[in-house]
Length: 265
Image (cartoon, rainbow, N blue to C red):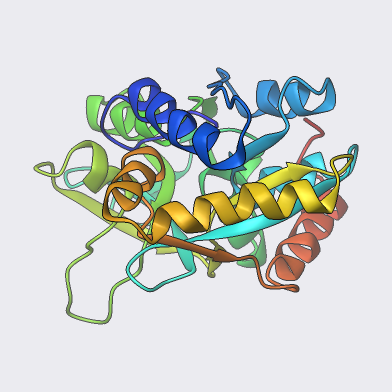
C-alpha cells in the first residue's frame, strides 16, 4: 500500500490485517509500504507484490505496462467516490487569480486527487498549471501536502475530500484527517473520482483473486474484521469493483497525456 494521510500506525495495522488474511487464504500474507507511488508500481512489475491497495489513477497508469485486475473498491459513508480540493490556509489566498506565482504542493504524479484531476480541472478552465504556479512541489503523501500548506512551505495544496451539500460542513478531507483543528479554505472542487481500489496482479489466476477478494469481504462481515479494515484503509466496507467504474479515469488520463499534463511514472 502507498503512503497515506490516514492517522494511526499503518505498519501495525497492515501487519494485523495480513495475519488475519493469512488464516483465511491458507498461505502467508506479508505487508509492504513502499515510499512512493512509483516504488509500488515497480514492486508490482518485479512481482515483489501480488496484491495492492492504490489510487485509481495509479491503477490506470500502472496498467499501461503490466496487467492488473481491480478486485474491490472502498466504500466510505455509503459513497464510492470523492473529489479533489485545492485548499489554502484560512489566512491564505482567496482566489485562483491570487495563486499566480505561488507554491503548490502536490502528492505524486500518479495521484488522482493529489495531482492528476486538479490539473485537468484547471486546464479545463483555461488555466495552465505550469504557468499559474511559481513552484510545484511533490510531497509523496496527502499528509505531507497538508503539512506543507499549514506550515507555510506551500501556498496551496491538493488533497482528497468529500464535497458537502451547500451550507453543510466538510466532514472528510485530507486536511481534516491530519489537522482537524486548523481552519482552511477550499478554492476549487473537482469532478468526482472513484474511490481507491484493491488490485491483483494480472498473471495470477482468477481463482486466486476470488479467494483473496472473498477473504477481505469475509473480514468485512465480522466486527473484528471491520476494525482491521478500517484501521488499515479507513474504509467502512468494500464492494466488487463495478465493471466500468474506472472508464472515466482512463479517459481523463488520455486527456492529460494529450495536453502534456502528466509524465510517465
